[in-house]
Image (cartoon, rainbow, N blue to C red; front, side, top):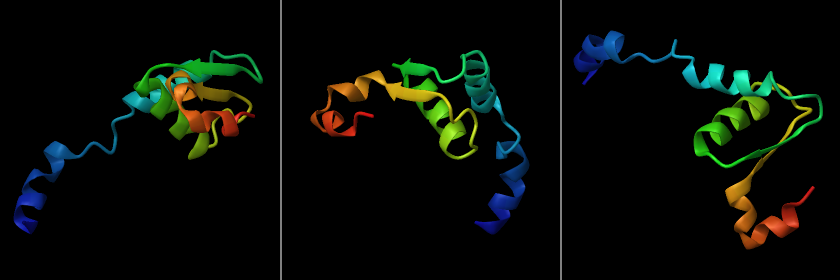
Length: 79
């Protein structure tokens, strides 16, 4: 296993791939201050949520996943 890892690491290393980061930043950068951003796609939701929660990007924007609003527990989570 260690040999296989070493042999294949260079072709499977994705640590420099920034597609989702750039995608999220391109969305967040275009929004006005203190925006409410309603998201309906998983790719947008996970990318933007990661950038906001983990990287601290644009904390002034409130992101809401539209599909989650259909769950009963959503009522208690309203802001």
